[in-house]
Length: 254
Image (cartoon, rainbow, N blue to C red; front, side):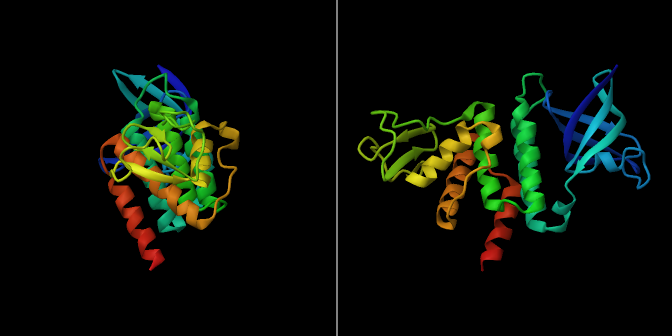
């Protein structure tokens, strides 16, 4: 049976001398793994369209629970990612997050593929900083997969804002200064007003407006720290690609 879908290649695995297996984040069916005959050959018919971080239209043959790439057509190549080690490492972190959180099912939100495409677009052309895109991707991905935190107001008194609010990273709840009883806990992050507004925008805004906000460098650093801590706390693990990306970022700041 042949099926056609569009998606982004988020992982390549070698299989034999000339073949490979690719993981595709599709628009409607989550992640699909497909065998690509001759995919490692320079002149292979599906070589260009099955490369890492290429957005393509795929025609896939399904047989005995195995998917084989029959034909494909390139839609968009994010070429500039390969020219910058920080960009490609961040894109690799996005992929590792997706591989861990998104399965293969018909109920996968379509906005997850759109989130990745938009993030790769802005990362490739440099219109948004890596810090900005990392924060947006982490918080929005978790929100899309059912781990959206309660950011509307204090979980106790419903207070909407304060000069400082407190974000419970473990339980995904927000508290005001009065209601937060354990401010010194490692699971509690103090959140300034501009950063809280950004968190609300990322988690709750329409996808068309998701990337339409600006922040000072100081606030961006705070936002980046909070979204990373929230992601790692909620998912209960670290990621090797994140560790590598952070090592590059720290090196650039020295």
